[in-house]
Amino acid sequence: MWQSGSIGSVVGNPFDVMKTKMMTATEKPSLGRAVSAMYHDQGIKGFYRGISVGFVDVSLRFLAVVDA
Image 1 (cartoon, rainbow, N blue to C red):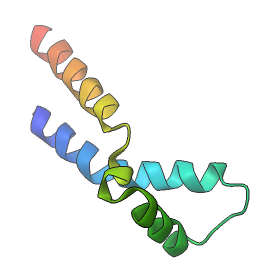
Image 2 (image 1 turned 90 degrees about the horizontal axis):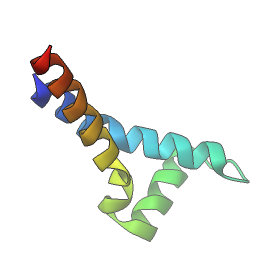
Image 3 (image 1 turned 90 degrees about the vertical axis):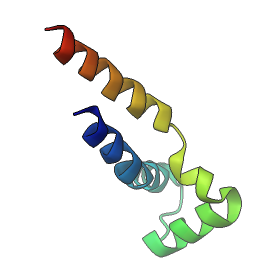
């Protein structure tokens, strides 16, 4: 059960990072330019910033279900 939450975090995190980047940008770039700039500046790791929060969330939810 926790595997599906982990996979969801791995797949969804890059979209959340890009959404946040685009929402906080002073000038609104296109999605393609934003993705290109992120990859150029930070590499693939840039798309997975903050993923540990998603894993902690999944872990805590799993523990809450198992203990219940």
